[in-house]
Image 1 (cartoon, rainbow, N blue to C red):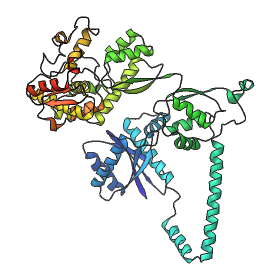
Image 2 (image 1 turned 30 degrees about the vertical axis):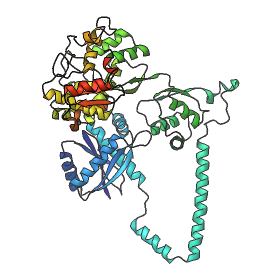
Image 3 (image 1 turned 60 degrees about the vertical axis):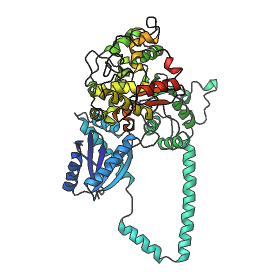
Image 4 (image 1 turned 90 degrees about the vertical axis):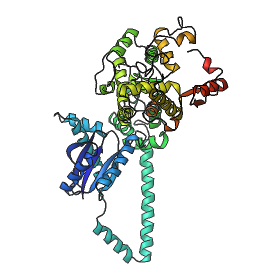
Length: 517
């Protein structure tokens, strides 16, 4: 049987083909994703090769769970089926195949392009599929087997069944013994807590490094190669049976060959690697908040300021489309919990956040969706940053976004107090000059959306995924609203006229509406 394997990505699709009788996967130049044209190209290849069986790589995370990319692949499979109605599609679970593909290409010491990585990943997917599906009986063998069973006498069938049960029991006992032996430490007779054993080789620390993005299988193979465990497959089984709710953490660990699987896994899931730290930057926080976090971690203030002002021109830089040259990074550093090495620079940290933001924008096609609302990417991120600060949940964020669109359409000012608060924070964070709300609301700043119509100069916080989605696809059911407020009870109240808004303030906002900006 001939097969085509596809490593499905949002920009390119890696292609490989093989004949199951030969069981060798061969890469083919990757197909560019081009508004549906990719399906025609794949169909053309299938016709040329006379193949209608496809194997699609289905990504899974380190816990073996499907991801957002997995859902993208399943959607792609449905569209491929529409383009090639007689296509037979199988999925092959895969994790980090692109990483392995790039390692292979590097080892060959020849030049390669991104498309080559995708096609090499497709060959890995196809090779894995072939290896997992070899050894099946042919149709003739199966028919002969059925024929012999049909002709067998009842007592022979019973005897065969008895033998099968005995063999299964023996196999189960053997498998349990194998499993039990391989979860033990490499050295079982050594107690490293005893002082006299400190110099024994089994008790000498082995430095084991877990790189960012490493999955359970990668860690298992690494531990086996370092001589710290007996069997990598047993390690993965033990982990999934007992620690599937825990995540293996990036870091550098000191392990010994006298540690059991349980001791090793407990340590690497606690995340106590000596050279790694976590940084949480939440949606709605600002560059000022990030600076404070980095100072607390131990980075120098001047170094942080220099990094925040530096130009960033990596593969992610397309997200700066529409941004004024003098504008900073506010709004572009995606809020998430990250892990970094102690040796990472502030620039490394910022580039990671920018890359994450670019991935989120690209995966959700926010640029196109903002354009449908009449905004460029910079304006969309700016409005999303305001929505992020104004509302806490996805439903209200979508309504608030629609209210702002309504006000812009009618030529009204946004009238958002959170933008004014940001304006004051920039020049008077300790409120030594602007001591009350009346003064704050009169600040002459392009961020004061009570004084100046339209969007403010730029983002006022880093918007999260929900605020970005709300701004890209606002709630059309709120198309009549022009006002909103958060009541003392935490509920959002909406109105169509200023009179209704003032009544909502009177009824629901005796305290919050008087809180200092």
